[in-house]
Length: 590
Picture 1 (cartoon, rainbow, N blue to C red):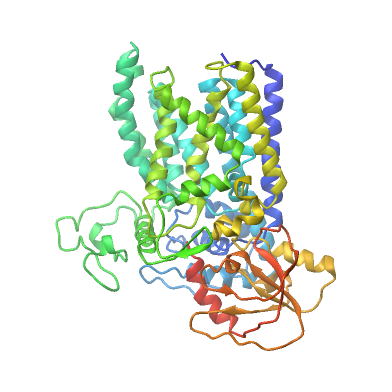
Picture 2 (picture 1 turned 45 degrees about the vertical axis):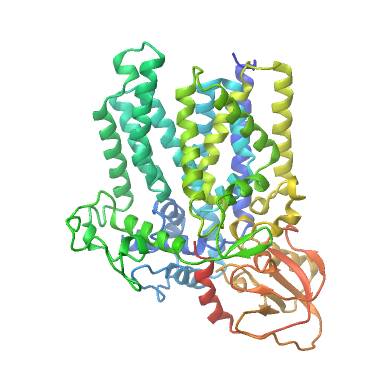
C-alpha cells in the first residue's frame, strides 16, 4: 500500500511538475549560448537533411541532431561547407560547425534556441515514462516522487536544454526499457512491436545503447528463469516466446537503419578503413582492417556503415593519450572511480540519499515480489557504470553516465511504500531529501551545468574538482554580453573562451589575454589595466591553455562558478586566434 493521495491532486501535481520541468528547460535553452559541441551538431543535422549523408559527426547516431535541425531547415540558413573532408577518422565537423555559425551570424543563436526547443519533447517523454513506470510498480505517490527527482535534477535540466544527445538519449533508453518490461509482463505481438520501436529509438540517439542488443536477450532469459521459480503463471505470461524477442530486435535494427535513411545498410566488415588500434590491427599509423583477408571479410553487418565507423572513431579517441582533470590536477590517465566521484559532488545530496536507500532496499529485498521488475531497472545502471568506468585512459564528462539516472529515479519511487520502519518517519525523511534537492537545484538555476553540491562547498568550488562539460562548456557568452551592457562597458575586453562559438557573433569586442603554452614563453608588458575574462577550464589549467593572469577577481558575469570569470589582467601575450581556434577544436571535441 502507498501513502494516500487523492486522485485529482495526483493529476494536478503531475501537470504541475511536467509544466515546471518544461519551463525550466525552455528558459535555460534560451539564455545559454551554444556549448562547445552544439555548432557541430547543428551543422551535421542540417547536412543530413540537405545531402542525405551521415559522415559528419558520425560518433553519435543522427536522430537528436536531425530533430534539432528541423527549425533551421524550415527557416532557411546560410551554408559554409568549405572545411569538410571525409578522411577516415576525420572530426572535421568541429571546423564545419563554427563556420556554419559564423555564416549565419547572430541569427545562429536563435537557430540554436529553436533547435533546443524542438528537442524538449524527448525529455518530456522520458519524464512521463519515469512517472508511469514508478507508478505502476509502487503506486501514485511513487510516480510523483520519481518525477520530482527528474524534474529538479541539475544534470537533466542542463543537458535537456541542449540538443547534444545525452539527456535525450537517457530518455529514449528509459522508454526502451519500459516497453521491454511491458512486453515481458504481457508477451504479445503488439507489445513486441512497441518494445522493438523503443530499442530502435534508443539506438538512434546514442551508440552507447548498442548494449541493449545483448542485454535484452540476457534479461529475457533471466526473466524466464526467475518467473518459473517465483510464480505459477501461465506459460504465455511467464515465458515470453523467443520468436517475439527476435522480432523485437529486428524491428529495433530497422528503426536504426531508418534513422540513417538506409544509407550504408549492411556493409561488409572488410570494407571499412578503421582508425582504432583494436579494429585496424597491427598497423602502427594510418588506417587498417584486421578482418581483411580473413573469412570475416565478407560478413555483412546488421548496423549502418556510419554507426560502425562512429564506434571506431570513438574507440580511437578513448585509446589515444589524453589528460584527465581531476581534483585540481591534470593526470595522464583516468580513474575507475571518476564517475562515482562526479556523482558524489554533482548530484544533489537529497537525491543521492534517496538513490542509496533505494539501492539498499533493492539488495536487501532481492526475494520480494518486485525483484524481477526491479532487476530491469538495476541491471542497466550497473552495465552503464561498469562500461563507462572501465575506460580509464580518459575521464571528462559526467554526461557519459547520464543514461543511468532515469532508472535510479524510478527505483527511488519504492521509498514511498508502506514497508519497513515507521511510515511517518519515512515520509519525513523522503520529504526532507526531496526538499533539499529542489532547493539546492533552484538556488543554482539557470546555471545547472556548473552545479556542485554542498559536500565541496557548492558551485563556487567546482573548478577545484572537475572541469569540461561538468563545469564549463562555453555556455555563458550571453551572460557575459549582458553583464558588459549592464555595466556600460564599451571598450575591448580580454577574453580566453572555451568553445567553438566565436564571441564576436554576440557582439563582444575582444582580444586574447594572458595565456601561456608549453612551447611559448610568456611575454610581460606594461599596459593600462583593463577587464579580462577567462573560462573556468583554462583557469583550472585544463586542456589547450593555462591561465596566467595576475589580477584579483572583481565581479562575475552570469554565475560565479560558471565558465566566465572576470579578472584584471596585466600580463599579455599575443597569438593568432583563428589558428589556435582550429588547433583547439580537436581538444574540445568529444
